[in-house]
Each structure stands twice: as structure tokens, then as C-alpha cells.
Image 1 (cartoon, rainbow, N blue to C red):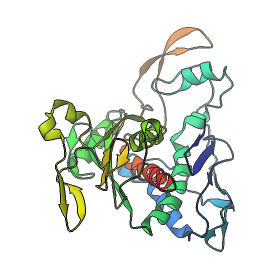
Image 2: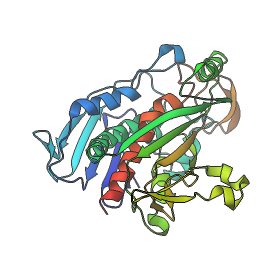
Image 3: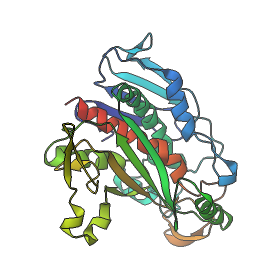
Length: 330
């Protein structure tokens, strides 16, 4: 399934080395003003980054809107946008040599060997540009409703601190220098979301948000509020004391991450996402050549992003923007 959402439906399509990737948003409210320059700004945050950090060029083409927008406003029809893929010289082909950490083996099993895995095909992080585009549209609508969304990197490898401090950069540079990669954690905070969003069981906000976040390539963990740390707490500490002041009900702490029983309580929604080390590394790795039916050694060539965190920040923000707006349309 490439479609997600309850009230607003998002469909993402395309492959890394195909002509284009694209997104369809069905159910956006009509008459909403959309600033395309803001969409381009969001996409640029995921585009080419610092060469010092080892970033490689990603899809930075301008999107083409084919429906759903007229004179800068949503029409009520599905919004469809395409982003043309750049021509990649000698992309990773569909050879029988499996790359550790990638979907090469599972894709061959699932799609009977017919999957287009050039540049990771439909599993590529390139497709998250379509999510960022969709999230930018949702974010502009939310901003007019007083809701803001901000993500930042809070951990890279063993380094923990404010976003991309010296120690975090050093972790990335050290991994890159050794032909390796390093994992990271991105934290996203949504402020201004009203109480009452979400629902029961599978319609709860944690369920919706986690499902969306796990669709982002490289995500291996999602936690809300205190997350896994809550397992070491007593209930007297984990429970958020409830207060009222000037008719406003709030909690003194936010271990629940702004959600109780799958429904927002009006406090900031706080989510953390754990990202695996980038699977493409230049170190020699053990693997299998399916065509020859034998064990082999593989060393990937070219430049590879040593850490997913920096490029994941706008993607995580986009995912939260979609989930919040989708819930607000209940």
C-alpha cells in the first residue's frame, strides 16, 4: 500500500531511477492559500547539504503541480505534483549481489525478482521528497490555525546535545573517514495542536503517527514523550499532574508526549525517531551473489551519506504535519 490517511489520503509513487516521483493529496480543504515558494524552501532543506558532512546531491528539481491548485489556492480536487528525477550515471543495478542492510533480498522475494532496485527503486529515500512536498502544503494550512512543527537532531551515535553541535558533527566525520556510517535520533515537537484529536485503538494519534513515521526509510524506532524511559519510572513520577489556571487545563510535566488514550490533551506533541546508520558504506561486507549461489565480499563505491539524521529532519516534520491535519479533519 502506497496510500495512507483517514480523512486526507496521501499516495506516493515513483522509483529512484524512474522518470519522476510524485504525490497525490486527496481531501485537502478547498480555498486554502498555498505558497509554492515555501514548498520549494522545504524541499531545499532536504536537498544538497554540506560536502563536509559527506552529503550527496538528492533530487532538487522543482515540482510540477498537475491538479488541485488554481491561482494559488486549493480547489478541492486531489492535489497531484511530480518531481522529475535527475539522470543518474551508472546507478546501482539489479545484479544478484545483495547489499547488506538494504531491501535487495526481501524485494526479490516479495516481487519475484521483478522489482526495479536501481538506486533502491521504491525503497529509496528519494521518495521522501514527495512526502516533504505534501507536508509543506499541510504545514501551511496548520500555521494559519496556530500550529507549529519543529524537529531537530538530538543524538548522533554516542553524542547527545543540542542540534548538530561539535560532538555530533565529529561523530559523522569520524564515521565518514572510516568508510562507515552512524545512527541518529530526531525529535519533533508540535505546539498549538488542540485537545481532542485522535481516537480509539487503531485511530489513536500514536497509532497514526507511528505508522506514518515507520514508512520513512531508515526509521527503526518511534517513541512518544518519555518513551522507553517510562519503563524505569514509578507511576507517581510517570503520571503528569493536571492543573487549571484561567480556565486553561494543562499538565505540569509531559511524560505522555501530549497524548492520553490515543487523544491529544493540548500539551505539545513530542515524538522521537531513531534512524539506523546509513546502510550504504564503503567498508568491505559479507554478502551473497544469488546469480552464482555463493558467498562473496562487497565494497560499495562512490560517495554515501554517513548519517541520515540531517536530511530526515524536514521529512519527520512533514509526516507530523500530515498526521495532525488529517486528524483535524475528523
